[in-house]
Structure formats: structure tokens, C-alpha cells
Length: 105
Image (cartoon, rainbow, N blue to C red; front, side, top):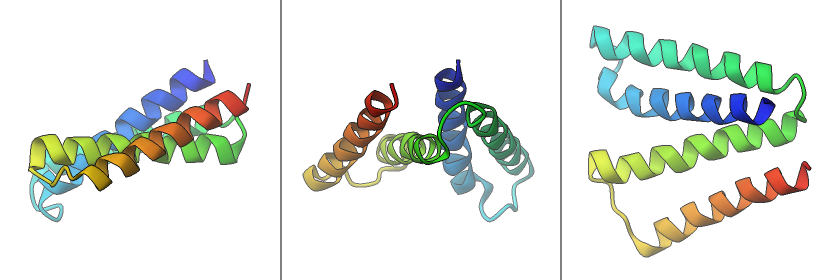
């Protein structure tokens, strides 16, 4: 169950990271409120997951999910470059996340 909480925490991290772009420096109310809510939910879910997962693994996977998701949504939603080297590096992060999951079993 901890891995489910961790995955959800990572998804909410993506939400707040992307949300930061839409807050325009916290000058827009609705995106700002949604971003702050996503931040809180993400950290709470991470904390629940860390009750049973090692902190190093949990934190690395949480930030990895957030990093990969944010980078991919940046490409898709915000028109950021999708160069081969950038995609390869994102792929390496995914491999690292999967490696941590396998190593924790």
C-alpha cells in the first residue's frame, strides 16, 4: 500500500510543479489555491508512504516521478524542447525509479 501512496504523492507533485507555471508567481487565485492544495496532499501522502518505506528510496522515487512527469508535461503542454538527449535523460530517471523499486523488494 505504501507504494500506492508514494505513486499518488508523485502525481500530486507533478500537479503542483506544473501548477506553479500557471500561478504566474502566485498572482492568480485559482491556480495558486490548487497548487498549494497539491503541495500539501503530495507531502502528506509522501509522509504516509515513508511510515514503511526507507526515506532514501521513498524520497528518490517521489522526486523521480515528479521530475519525469513534469518534464513530459512541460514538453506536451508548454512546448518545451523534446530533444533526443533530454528524452534519454528522462528515460534514465525512469530506469533509476524502477531500479529503486526492485531493490527495495
